[in-house]
Length: 563
RNA sequence: UGGGGUAUCGCCAAGCGGUAAGGCAACGGACUCUGACUCCGUCAUCCAAGGUUCGAAUCCUUGUACCCCAGCCA
View 1 (cartoon, chains in turn orange, brown):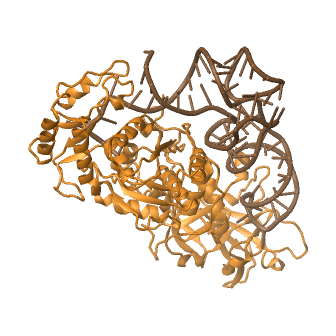
View 2: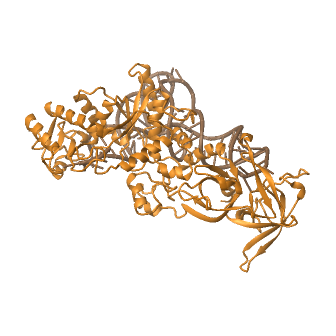
View 3: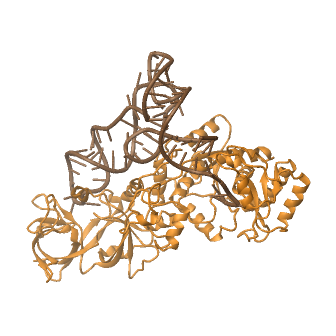
């Protein structure tokens, strides 16, 4: 098992990769399967990686196989150990466990080297002393065949000698490379004598200065898979035309097995960006507040936003796996969190934009407590006592002096229920010099204690409130989609930066929370009734100054109706 | 104009010759001390055109559209 939690989030939907695995198991091609998630430690994981993680670890879990976590660390110039910890943490958070199966491509450097020797001896690899520019020029174009390098026919002995000297550090960066000898006229450019080793006199974060030549992806990845006994090597679509090379390398070498590479379409989500480059720019140009900004599609960002790992897994399950390029609607992700949080998040009352309401006739200085259910549909979640007094705050949006048609919240002369408390009626409003409403005065029905009308009269509107004397002040951050256009920076679109949503974050101070929320801790999630799902910000919140993040709003057919 | 892919409802996605699952969204309605949740109901003939067949989204042909590839990145 490779999940830490037992509950399957959603029923497993069929997809072409599952079908392949099922067939391979059924017809005996494999007794059990081995997959792998092979990130390069050069950045933070995002929701797109989650799709791959769920796919690979999910297959292993569901078919009783195993999934390796392997760092594809073959380019020391770009990689760093700082990313490794974050990646491991993210995979664990998502609910997966690689157990003993933690690997590094860099652990195979010596094997890669030995295999390269085999290729040279078979006359299938040669040292090319051309410059990068020359190699590019000889590669040809999409329509024209390439030209063979003048160094292509070097003898095996010479190649062996040169390659050994490359390893020994006798040459400078970029002066020599080891290339495969395949076919410079191949219509598949990947087969035009691809470079498999380059010289980089750079320390590697794991192997230090042991090496100054490093293998390229196409050469290292397939061999790594073979060494680990991977059965299904799942990657994204852009590697599709690398597959002939993947197979070519393994066919020439005495490797333990020959994994099957299978490609699927990477995840694209609308109203956000997913490329490492753009994500990095957003952070570096301070367009967002770091990798873990709750608006970022990074796993650290999404987590800080309040998403549960269960909802991410459910999301990955529902979007399916295919080979056609897709742009998933953000609403599917939002639906996934709502579905999860609706069931598990305790309810609470919080007023984000407070409007003072004075209950006329309520005994001066009196305070009482009302029992409020933590979850209206699940009694097992218990209840809490919520203090009430003669002055409460309600949401500004819940009052209209001149109510529009269909508005059934608080308005002059209309009765409305303060949830769990009393039925009140607005009698008058108090305005400041500018005509701004600063206070609403209500009468109340003492017989409606607890919120129910003793005479059975129907009260259409129920609104939430917080007692002024008992309220906990807090900062609340309302997040919205990072971009205001569905495919920022896409084809025929201006620079993605111009599509940033100016309202992607709104910081509200002086919000009034019911006192029970004072004891909230990191990763606690609540439904602030009638508003949405919120969690304590894991970075900026302090006990004496709580900060809540809005994970998602509730569906709101009222505001939709108004549109 | 080389090679590799993909085309099924607004967005995903099952289907593998036997008469179009499901989810999201949307739209009606019921219920409701969250205008939430829940519950009912509505919502496609499968890129196009030919062909094979009793029968095709599924097979063949010819087109069309879109994506990927010319890093000593992964």
